[in-house]
Image 1 (cartoon, rainbow, N blue to C red):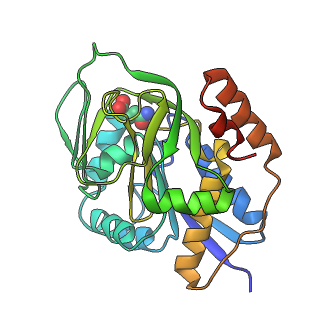
Image 2: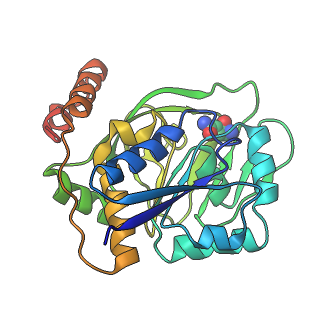
Length: 268
Ligand code: GLN
């Protein structure tokens, strides 16, 4: 029997401003290359709470403030409950930029009213105003979220450094939720406290576009492995793939940004 994976893709049209669809493609391809059947289910305005409950993995991308507001209005009631249930029950997911802002308590845009979030992640995001500089540029972080850092170290044999690109006006402050990592290069959650993203149950929240997963394929493998283990309740080990090109691209980026040599060698 071939194992199956359903990827739920949050609002593909409204929340694809920053190329995060690359995360969906990466998960899909890397699972297919291992012989798993993959289905991508758009979780948009036509989706129901039951659709959300049916997926094995969730991907949410970035969006502009206007689109975020539309999505937030749509993600009420049964849909909000289904999202909460999935994340609380350990469904893995990768949520980028606008998506974590939605999963937090609220997002205050540069212009207009506060948008209430789902309150699943204990964080708040505030855009300080249209005249404030956006946080734009390359981003490198060291994963510090304890369980994820340990899992990724086991998978790769070294400390996990993630390479990406940030582009956000909102600044995020974490409450009791664990940070995903600490900033090695770039600004991260708010440019002040050195934190980047958040990690809760098996949900990875990050400001890192890039998109994130092609640049850090071991994270895609962690998501696939976690999703299959949860679904099939059996040990799953993924066949290794040839990631030479991705690793070379990472090395080139580390060199260009002059980040520590341990980061360069960690995943070679
Ligand atoms: N609208 C949000 C911000 O500017 C999210 C941007 C994004 O998703 N890249 O903070």
